[in-house]
Length: 266
Image (cartoon, rainbow, N blue to C red; front, side):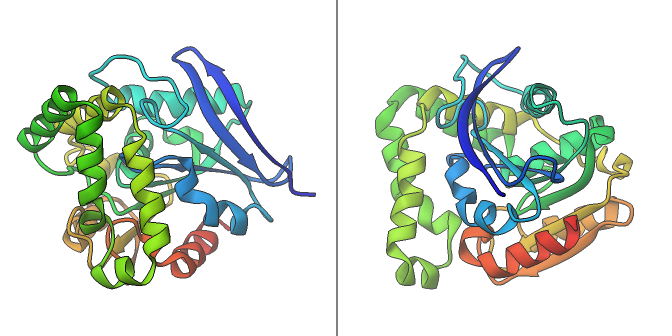
């Protein structure tokens, strides 16, 4: 029978808030959240996929209930956190799906720790997200203004995360997503911006040998279809799926997202 539990999992880097759904002994699928969200962003996927998988969700460091060490962070740390979680759970290999920042974590794992992955799904991400100046400016603003900055980011997040039509049609879900970012610790958010500022895997992703699926939102203004196509051209054997969605495609097009994810990791 599927089981569900949320716990604090101790690792060498500190404690991480982890939710585990699905039967023991089933293939493990790790889900990694985007910048400014929590593991709750994967509620729908956990419910649908936990019938056949052991679904492991976690709050990325600096987010939700997980450890918030002072920054800056790096993707060596963020990827290392995933490996530490797998070790703590005694999981040798798992499928991994990350969205946006979580997708970049997946790329890092594919390059540096591919032997720990059976499948890699990179959603609404890129081998280089944004610009160094843009991320450093945002990090400085968040550190200076604290909770007020998080409130400002929450107010502006729908235009980055969802299409106008979805925002109008699903106001309660959009407000819930805004609540996630409003509740993130400013230092944790800023420290992840620091990680994104220096992160560039464009010259490295051709080394990924894990079976890889790329998911893009056709209306995504942050990580575009062109970004996904560039990764598709670089990663040997990668598959590409485009969904009618903006940046958080798992929330805006859950049925299509889940179908693509489930078929790939099966």
